Length: 220
Length: 220
Image 1: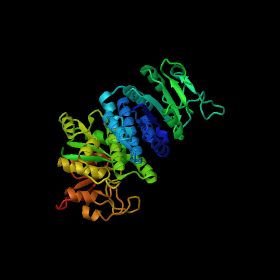
Image 2: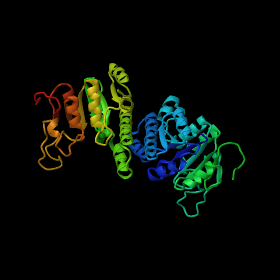
Image 3: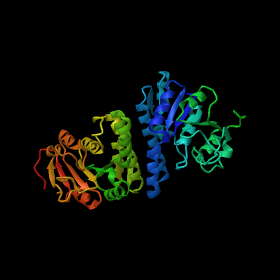
Image 4: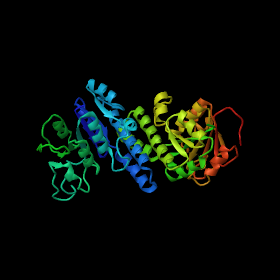
């Protein structure tokens, strides 16, 4: 698996399904964010204050649910719990969508906190599989300021160290730290234009933000 | 486990947590409904039309999530995936909350359909464990007409066969059929008054509806 592709929950259902259809047959494994379900859990948590562990585990189950539902709508995709099954699915030219709950139950590698969300989980899996990582969201990448502000400028590339100081972006607050910890680069791309992601996967240039987590020269 | 207690998702979070606190130390195993999360999946399904199997499996994962969260807030409760673990928890005087997804993955005993929801799942588990079944909801039981209508009368008892012809009640549409199939009786009680359920569990009378699924004489 050359690429771990994390499909943001904000794209679910239609855009996530369309995006993943375009990935069938590519050298990629998909992980879905928890979307509205995880947001609902955050709402409950704001009132009730569950333990960090319960919040972490249930948020990951939301990723399983959306992953199952996306896989359900794509003929060439299959939801899997293990890397073994993901490999079998790929051999058949199909797209594996990884449901991360069981793998995380066995490995439990990350801090239990709302800061560790599906982006961070995908980085960990990319490190585990020695894959590149593509984060697919509902904006074109990371901007210098809030993208809703007039004149906000899309960053072609940014160092993860610099991103540590950004207050809010289209990626999880914990992501840059994990990229540095795991020595991984990452691409952030808009899922509403699947061709952009496909270009990147095929080694071509495309509209996106490249986050440099490794000590390597600039790509763009 | 003398009782399987199905706690309706409509009671989540506060009433479900308070209710389950009262059950600690009783001879019971809890199963939680999927609540707002399952309702959200129904909304998606209305638009997107997932397969019956995907809808069934993801709705059961919602039950896991709410079960984990309820258990998280009760010192004397523990979320478990297996009957073996439920028994261990009970030996310690604690309350097991069964997360049904894995048991249902192994057994897959029920039709995959939106009609088969958490009530039906709980009936199956009660049959499996040779337990009595208590369905805990947000109304006092089953009424002769919609309980929001003035003069609606709470039924003290009803035969499951008769309930087959009711259009909408506080229990799942599929429940009476399953009670008949599995030859099981069932009590429906309001979770906002935990003492009522405790009375029933202790063999006393209480405000509720008794659904007769077995060919036995009337209890009330």
